[in-house]
Amino acid sequence: MKGRVFLIGDNIDTDVIAPAGYLHLGIPALRDHVLEAVRPDFHTLVRPGDIIVAGKNFGYGSSREQAPAVLKDIGISLILARSFARIFFRNSINIGLPLGIIKDLNSVKDGDIVDYDIESGKLYDDSGNIIALFAGPTGPLSEILAEGGMVNFIKMKLGIK
Amino acid sequence: MSDHPKTMAEKILSRASGKSSIAGDYVWAVPDLVYLNDLMGPVALSVIRKIGIGKINYGGKLIFIVDHIYPPKDVSSANNIKIIREYAEENNFVFIQGGEGIEHTVLIEKKLIRPGDLAVGTDSHTVTLGAVGCMGVGMGITDVSAIMALGKNWFLVPESIQIDLIGRLRKYVSGKDIILSVLKILKEDGANYMSMEFHGEAIRHLSIDQRMAIANMTVEAGAKAGMIEPDELVGRFFDIDEEDLKNVRSDEGSHFAQRVDIDLDSIGPQIAVPYSPANVHDVKEYVGVRVDQVYIGNCANGTITDLREAAEVLRNRTVAKGVKLIIVPGSRDIYRQALKEGLIDVFLDAGAVISPPNCGACAGLHMGVLGDGETAISNTNRNFKGRMGSPESRVYLANTYVAAAAALDGRIIDPEASL
Ligand code: SF4
Image 1 (cartoon, protein in one colour):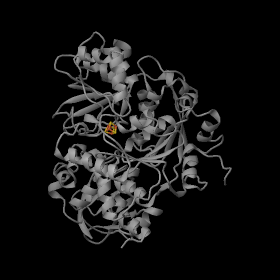
Image 2 (cartoon, helix red, strand yellow; image 1 turned 30 degrees about the vertical axis):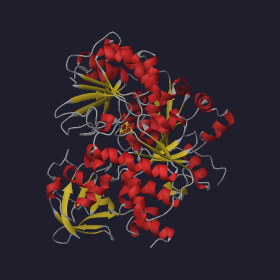
Image 3 (cartoon, rainbow over the protein chains, first blue to last red; image 1 turned 90 degrees about the vertical axis):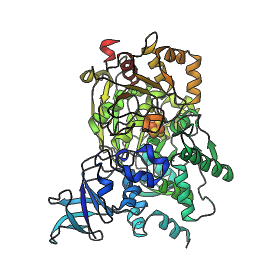
């Protein structure tokens, strides 16, 4: 997959990703406000395939699943971070939005176009050099992601077609 | 393995999964209680529909409670309440209509949970239940739907941090300052994926209200649960004898990944400054900061103890000209008690507006949303960018004395120096 990098900092919280004042209106209403407090232009720039590269504790704060859901809805296909907040991590996998914990990262700039392979956990620059290694989820989460999210996982468990 | 000394989290998850487990184990556990609010409930039901199951396989207590946007502010929020009410009624689940109070406050007040329970809520502040030794864990709607569909969900048994509290709190210093002092040390992710367990001789001097303030903000360090070791006070509240309480507390010799000591005598009023609840300083460093709004309420600090503290500051005084003072009792019972004690009169005389029990502007939902460039001081739990309204607004978090005192002059003051 190929996409643009949105580089953001540490402790990006769920109120910044999905402001609570629009939650009751649903995902479409959140699209114009996603990350607006830190990146007002984000919703106009993002395209399917784009990725977020963040610092530590991405998704800090509330339990709102709308945070990963609106990022996925607007086109984000992978989030890489030094670490993730617990609930955000579960929520993302549950809705089938891939996450990677950065193991090794060479310089990557905001706006860079990168190639990535989620299976092998590698990020490449536009000349094909590896610029980052990342690890996906382990434990029950890897099974859930393999099914494409929690809804499919539950269906599989319950034998629902 | 069964005689391995266990932390509270290890004990609770061992019981709920029917399998002796320690930190690092993955278990499938059945929560004793699951609760959903008006903001998340309708979305969870849409996930349930997507899964396509006819009946709910969860056998524990399932509660739908309205608190976030009540009374409804628009058609969408009214529809959300209608959706969960109809669903709960059709399926015979407990439905608590708005006005009863904020979910976590109500669950403790009405004794809907007990020490040693595992409770899951669609809200990160489910950790508040740790005030009485219940393992409250926040999850997203799909995870909660999974519990409804499968009857259980997976948990990673967390490592625990031991927080030892000694000494006594000074006047004008409260439970809020204890947890802010802890956040100052652990920062935003110091307890990510972990359970925080509070021990120490100081606990017996803390009311359940103060313990709620502490447990409530453990999630601000990323904690999965934050529990205060239940003592006789909690035993009396729930009518549980000492032997049974002992089973809830962690065992002698259980393993803690880290230990933090807090000497209550040494802490003064604290303040979390924008834009993080872990960006904590002494209030005295921020004396003089102008505020447009003072907000007193929310799931941790809308208690009768908080309202008494606010009334103590506001009695026979008035709010500075132009400052908005919004007071939100955490529940109907708290509201009624405040009326009986004459606190509501004190607030009205001071120039406050009293909101019905709800989440209100705590999360920027309604009833006190901040405008561009406005500054608020609040005794709530989050001050993220845009949390209470405009992305251009700023929120300071402090205890109730400090918040109320800022309304008098429209500037932050140190109650220890100036009240
Ligand atoms: S009062 Fe605030 S923190 Fe508590 S549940 Fe409501 S919105 Fe969340």
